[in-house]
Image 1 (cartoon, one colour):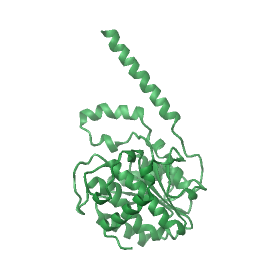
Image 2: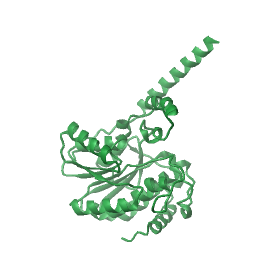
Image 3: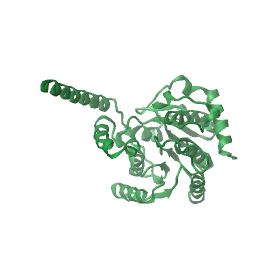
Image 4: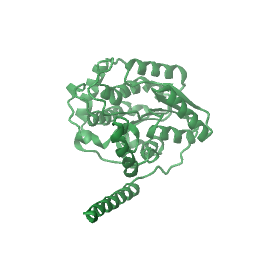
Length: 311
């Protein structure tokens, strides 16, 4: 019996090692060294995880970085760390809560009043496993943070992005979108992370079409499976102690997970792929539903209506 138990443990260890090696060998990194001096970059959810690593890399490259998050204390710590690590003092904190459209509007208004231009907008913030909660705006909380909030923010900042000679909008989505069951007439139904991420991808395609004449490129991406607190923070302490070490062993680090975001934000010559989906620092053809132009248009129309947005 003891031999069998030891054999199972040994087999699991070997399996985990092989899986970790596979993940490492299939994790691509951004190779370019594009300088971002003179560029202004907004990264939402950049006080932690891949958002923090993205903001850190942009600061290393000389950009003016706006760390956009809802937690003032964590955001302040992140900004100070980035300044210390990069010696770039042009890093600022702006508070925005994507779960409140009022907060999004206030944030965007502040940006429009204080920034002369915007070169790169990275909609990185996201969440899951929030359950059936409604926001003050009447939307499912998970859907608002992952989709409606970023959409409103993007639309309000488009005119500022137009002031840059060549700007980019990056929407962090997920390959999990392939598990979505999207009903455009019921976007505020049962909360679903895959559905929100499919909406991110379809919105990216439609927005790219509408901004094509303005030299604004729009991309969606899958960062990979990341060892961050986006999942573990919702677990009980007992489950967390078991899952957290395993996730850090099997999944990408936040730095590794940020590579595709950094790639689509900086890589020269990919503008012709606007509206496209990226994974592991390369263009990836997504599944059929995520490439449906009519569905993307319908989603756009319904989203604008629900947000009651008037340009």
